[in-house]
Length: 322
Length: 249
Image 1 (cartoon, helix red, strand yellow):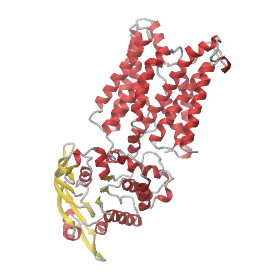
Image 2 (cartoon, helix red, strand yellow):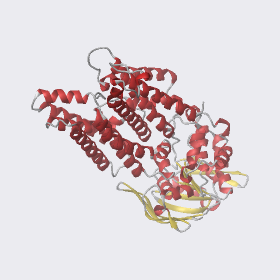
Image 3 (spheres, chains in turn orange, red):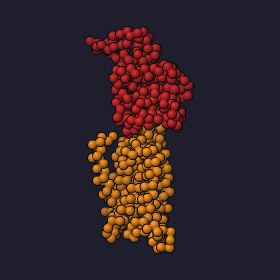
Image 4 (cartoon, one colour):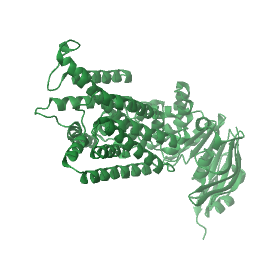
């Protein structure tokens, strides 16, 4: 099957899951109720559509940035978590919640500020070094600093309600997201995605090692800046809108490598589509799960993602995965 | 198309690894850089490729390589590093196509010619992870050739090759030079130098101790001085191959 046909199939899958995500939930809204005077159509328009759009965009951002980071660092274990952007955005949001801010806009702005600060720090820390080891180390340090500061803020929180709200937010969810959330996050995600897509040729060249890549006209400083700014915008905005949702960036490129090949640039578009599909599917599943409340998407993702990833790893040991 | 070095000095950290090197290299010839470990051969090659910051000037047709736009430099100077790394299990044709990156196209003619010249067309759709060391080094050479550079700078291309593949590789490099490109190769194996080189550059401790046509510059005496080892020579056709025999007592 040609690459174009595979991408078309993946796009169809995303469209199907998107439609499915509009239909399913505690109240089932069949296609016959769409676009009519049926009151359930309102649920679709005002609740499920923004949620599905945000889910698809977030999944695409996570999948794309995972594929870019794995290509850039030439390491199949990289994901947006290693650059520290998720934890810095979470830190910003938690600070806003604990400071007593209730509005979604303020929490979003604080999270974006946190992500931007972390990315600026990462860019400054790796400014003079072309080594990816420095990049990973700096990102890991930023991630653990963000985690520690978040824990510190929680420990000094003035009241248990704030703590509960923080924990709720940290678990990551698409519940109750509405059009204003989409309007805030989507432009930054799109801009970030665009910057990340520009790294494609450099990612291929870097597969030959850095000296060979530079001899092919790749400028490492420019690529690093694109990776940092693109991940910061795409993932930062995503975390700001939905909380921390892991595993997508790590798992999706792995799943797609056997289908689309190992060339890093060839994985970018499929990973964006695959990330969108995975998040839409997971978000539909958590809504269908029995019980009064919903399983948090971030929690569900880790619970499904971790064993699945282990299975992949065990399988790859048998087949000799490079 | 001459590649000229004028008082080139390269530092790595606080260490001076190449010191005050001036050379004029001619296209259409194979120039081999020789010297003991740590002589600064690879650093000099990287400085020529514009990949290491240096003092002094490396110029191609009178234009400084350091100030050339990265893509133009990449179109004119191809560089093959010593380690045959491909980090992902890409297909052979995908790797060779990377050579077209500086041109921003996927010119099938250039890619086809490069694959034919290196004998990799037969396994173009195989993943590089499934290749032998010899096959992989041919694929990476094809990658550089696909960019049709005016100059090819190659760092120890024989490192993991058996004698048959090593001779093939030298033959290919000579073929490239015969086609009009300039070829600069760092080599370790002295007998092979005499088979491959038109010109040689002898380096020791970061400096060029001698440079010129192989048959006049590379002698038993100069090699002994360079490496601190006694050499014998074997005549093969019109070439004299140097073979290390013992450390002087």
